Image 1 (tube, rainbow, N blue to C red):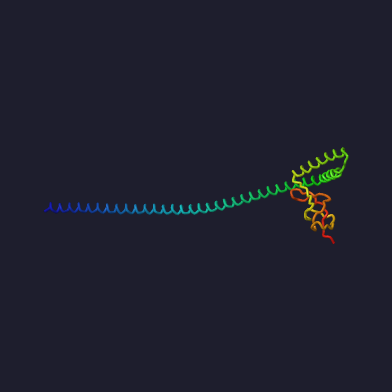
Image 2: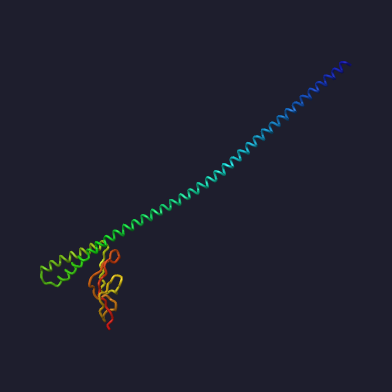
Length: 215
């Protein structure tokens, strides 16, 4: 009887111990689960913060990229304007140099034309002479005159000798008008002094006699 009661008591102790162990294990498991959940929550929070920082950095990077693109576009525009201004300045400089060159050549040609006129008059005056000495001199003068005309032509200085051409007030200067039934009115009958152009620009008009209809 006593043994049975002792056995039952021992069984109860064993059962109680097992239950306590089970309860402790369950409590430990619950605490472990709570710790894991807490750790997971902390990790999730940290990941969310990292993600938010990453988004913020990306937005800042996009803003920076847009700013850089705007600055690059402005720099390109400024470079194009500077290039255009440099080209315009170079073109203006070239034009000014060309004008200065032409002006200097025009003044030189204007001073040389009286010499050409004198040589031409000397050649015409000696053309009908029978004197051999005069003829020899006239030939030399004529060669000089033709050489000078060739040199002028090399510098685009051209003779305006419009006999038989319609009168052009842009390059001709009418000295007188003479009735002439054999020519169309306003036709150049004679040239009293030849004109000259420099690169197509008039430097001296031709002095001419112009025909008109008989009265």
